[in-house]
Length: 183
Image (tube, rainbow, N blue to C red; front, side, top):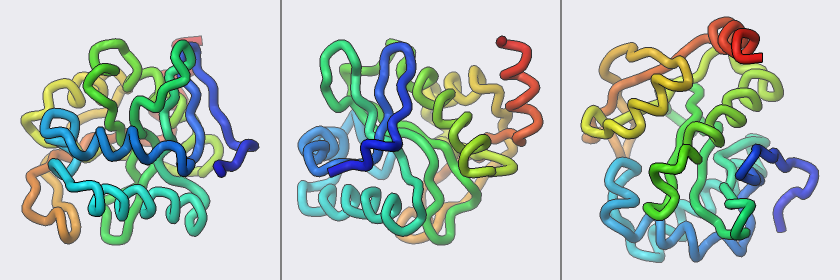
């Protein structure tokens, strides 16, 4: 069962730690070619299960990981997004991956905005990156709308060392200045 104390609500989303009931959605996300194209590629259920448990384990060991994203209007699990920093990663990342039926609704931006606030305000991070495949135009748009800038090419650790990524990011001060301007 997930930690009921850590729930972030946005206008249309609930963000909370990984829970056992999220696996079917996770398996759909990672099993579909379109859904998983830019987040490691399609995976059979047993491999998706191990990734799912890695996310839950990160919550237990690090005290943070990507949140499960629940659509308020339907109560459905629609993806995962938020803070992520596995061993060897090129920085403290806020990432997103949503099921295809949740694309184009502004959910990635809405959820990532809340996750950026969490990363800077609660986790105390000084900067946040996003590792984005150069062909992933939709995620580049989200990164730009968040105020992140392209820093250049990056490298991921094994087993993703052959994936091409660009590093986007911003510092806490830049995020806070933009947040103050929005309010």
